[in-house]
Every structure is written in C-alpha cells, then in structure tokens.
Image (cartoon, rainbow, N blue to C red; front, side, top):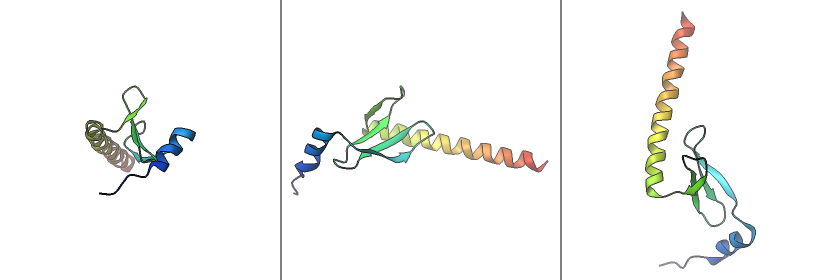
Length: 84
C-alpha cells in the first residue's frame, strides 16, 4: 500500500486550498477539487461549499440529468417555434 504524501496537505494548511471547478452540474451547482490535496467540494442547497460525499454525488447526478433534459427540451421547443 502506498503512503500518502503529506506535502500537499501541509501546503493547503499553510496557504489555503486552490479549488478549481471540475464539473458544472447546473448553472448554480458546481463540483470543485483542490489542485494540491485533491479535496472535493460541491455547492449545497444554500449555496455554500460542502464536502462531496457519496450522497451529494448522487444528488448532483440526478440534478445534472434533470437540468440536461430541461435545457434540451427548451432548445427543441425554441427550434420548433422558430420554424413557424
């Protein structure tokens, strides 16, 4: 088993995390990962960042599916209404 490298954790403890957006679930919900220690966060229902647990991963997957279906339906509706 490989030992975890403590350097990234120490870096984040000293200088803070450097989060990057790794996934855009909806317009308002995103998933973030720290470049150094690989900590994953997501936006919760209040708009605050929380740890990305398996429960939040499942919620985000469902939200993404609903969001994609809705935007696709709106695109199809706009496309068909512009023809007439």
